[in-house]
Length: 298
Image (tube, rainbow, N blue to C red; front, top):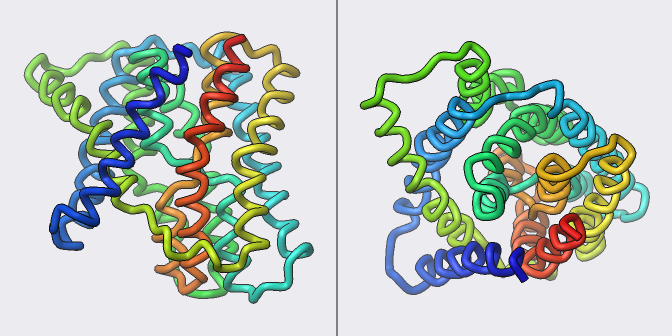
């Protein structure tokens, strides 16, 4: 019940974003600008602030990081298998491939913060710092046949990675920001989660659910059922407990990131199938996330 109580307000904000996009009358450009502001300002501020104020214990976190890397690689392998199972055009496969392992950072940070406060944000931020580059490189590599893209530049310039690296560096070095700057970052961090969740809802596209149903439902099943189960087995094998175990399960069970849709469209793959995967995994995770996290806490 505690997990459901923590997660339910998060999905209410997502549904609020969906409703505002359709009935509030704001122009499409407003939502695009809001997403950029969240991605480049608010969420980096949240990650840097949480990590720079945390005691980073890499020796204790390492089993969680290895677990995350392994289940992400397995998710990529399962995504690749869909090409064998379904005979859709290559541009459909290239887009849908991402749906087996990419995760929504906004939802992950919000849930981690609701369950564990700053310690949860720091833990999942550290894990995301390792997995975002891995996910970006694999996604761009598969999509490259359908368009251009400098994967190295996109990875190294990713604001979430830069904020994670900076926050970890500050913590390990024992540094601290001037009080005024730290207060500003804290205010930006407070705004990041509600705005990010509203943006997630605004980005849901429910008009593509009839597209490439084989790839669509395969990806949804892998992301919400198989990947968390694999993460569970790996986490148990590495002896994860408490915060570290819950963080690994949470990240594995997250819905697909809307960034996957943006990347697919930009590289001329089939944006419709990945848009449907984003929408379905986001809506269905309202049921699956409490289940997995409740089991992890049992």
